[in-house]
Image (cartoon, rainbow, N blue to C red; front, side, top):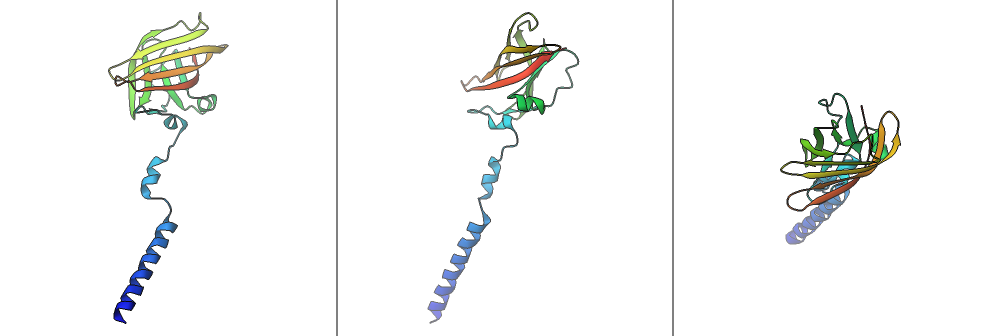
Length: 162
């Protein structure tokens, strides 16, 4: 009889414990997968592209892009440059300030091209002018390549102007 009570108690304890786990919901590890913004969701392979505030280093002419018109309107920029020397991005959790290698003349061309490179990333920006008033609006693509061959491409929407 003593063994029957122990067995029955163990059975109830186990049954109650399973109910607790079910009620508790997903395991704590699942909460690590919560993504906070559109840019972080759009990553590929080992490249994580994050949003940046407009860089304080940029004083005059600039180009800045988001991944969509909606992100642009809410200032969720993934790229900004000073229209000549330095480009800024948040890549793999680190703010990067990279030298522009080449850039097209935005006021003459209908197409925008920029090449940026450092030891860890090679970035290509290609866009087509969609509106040209004080600031020139562009839509296009941004492609990031790492030396290991990992490539990330995303649509971009943004403007260039002084």
